Image 1 (cartoon, helix red, strand yellow):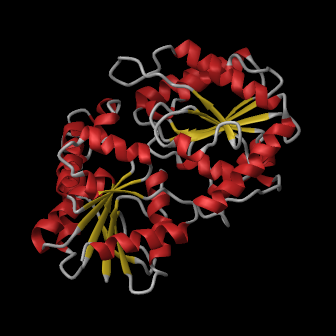
Image 2 (tube, one colour; image 1 turned 90 degrees about the horizontal axis):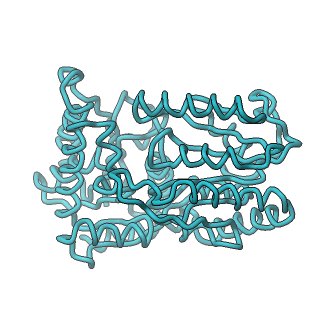
Length: 398
């Protein structure tokens, strides 16, 4: 069975959880007997033997309106044109969904869509994409409603698909959790990256890793940080802002926080994976203050590094982090603004700070939860099992 995996992100151009997902899923699918995997991605050609095609958006569309969305569609056209000899097409994120949909129409092949998020539940993307948000929403809706199978990366995501796209028959929705490479993400007790970034290994430490976007809740973490025990150390691995405006907003907020309290480090830009693993491994608490998180892969990565997690109880996170066992979940009630900000931002920030401080003051519990977190990862979230379930889904569509 020849499977084409369609994605915007693929190494070395990976910037989010969906790209990490595709990287590891494709590698494990290639090991499943009877499955021949070819990845079609955006960007320049790669030497990776799994890459069957790399597709650049048309340069003539570089300055077109819509924040690059028309260029995305041009890459999708190129992808669709290259899939004539494929048995199953599997697309990831709206960037590649339309290419998969076109291949289904052109060749009559089954199309599988993995939903890592849903555009209607990310209204802040309109801030980034302008009118392009309508294009991205059109691509996603069209592909999901016509797909032969929709993979939801969590039960919460499956519920969201049914609620947002009621035209999708529930029998076509399949929950297959995200996974993690537990050999790569494991405790690293070295200190070379800590030394390079000026992180004090002897100070109680809280680490955040994520893009600068409304979704990841970094502004609420900065509110919470002002309430934390001032002897603790906050390390922000925060880069790649959605827009220059939110980038400038967060920069100003971080600078104000640094002026008001010591031990706040902002590692601007993309931090190497090895550095992230070491930083998280040395943290007493990993914090995920997201306001929307269909799965929350970053929490798995922290748990695999044996680090206790404090996270908002949104989306798929409660399916990963077990409250009182591998971490602490903070209740979240969305407000009525267009972004889905917390109904009580001050209360949410205070709750985050309280849970973080409780763990910082109880290192024995933090260590126990961290160890339990890795055990949970190894039991439930490894890639070989996820690849086998995905291959079984492909075969059911023949």
